[in-house]
Image 1 (cartoon, rainbow, N blue to C red):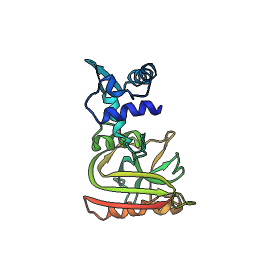
Image 2 (tube, helix red, strand yellow):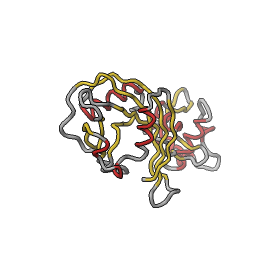
Image 3 (cartoon, rainbow, N blue to C red):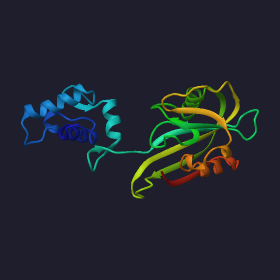
Length: 225
């Protein structure tokens, strides 16, 4: 986005509404400014009502993610739900997921997925469980984990920052999908049968929290990829 367009959104973020004369910088030609104002309006960020300009819902979402110091949208942690499920008939087997996307391509961990905008946590977890494994279950929210993964080569380079909402699955039913998709593959398995070097970062800490039997836990994990 052009810096003048970002400045328009910034100014509107500090007011309920502004007139054209209040938005336009004094040293800028009206035609030049109007071009950028019309652009953000055409993109759906700004609306005009009774001679005043204000942010639309899309504009409000944009400025909500904006750094007011840098006037750019900032990187923010990704929110995900993750599901811990034990096989109903085979003790020791867990619902695992082999990821097929960077930055954890080829790693094995617990099934998880992003929360869609507007979803409740339980709806998001239920949807991800069905989409990625084909299974159904009663889900119990049990804790939260803040996970930061740094580069193995450069400890100052943050690669991934995820906030997990952890659910325990009860009364698991259905048949697990035989095939995965572009993102990965679900399977029932025992951790001792997997190569520990291929576990997702922080998996051991996550399992320690889950298998402790506590609810309402919170853990902060920092690892290297």
